[in-house]
Length: 166
Image (cartoon, rainbow, N blue to C red; front, side):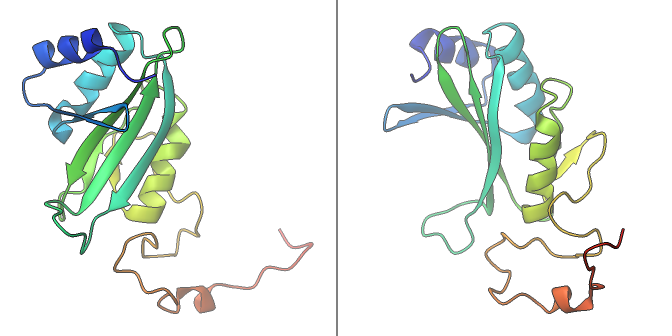
């Protein structure tokens, strides 16, 4: 179920720099990265959005009409009322950083690491922001639209690990 009008009203009363939209019955809130942590804290503590469903990112490079390069999306839910809400933060290079929300939801730990690994978005204050899917030596972020489909030859430089080696 989409967010209730009372939830949207409470958010817009508390935070003035929000953009509210709805798409196919799902409510979305866009806000600046400077207000992300306080808005999510408010949603969790005051409006009882107790479940972090996912954190993901979209690269809008060469997307018609896009004003920003990256769209970071937080999908949260209230397990009592079944409300769901998407919180979006738009980012551009070179300022690809947002505050970590691991202090709010421990499950954000690996989600933030995955977004860092694939897109290069930094989560400031993250307890252990390092690659989770690729080797630490990998220097690129392969889900960016400017990353070549065949790669840049990075995987050929890694040592071959065979079964039985540790």
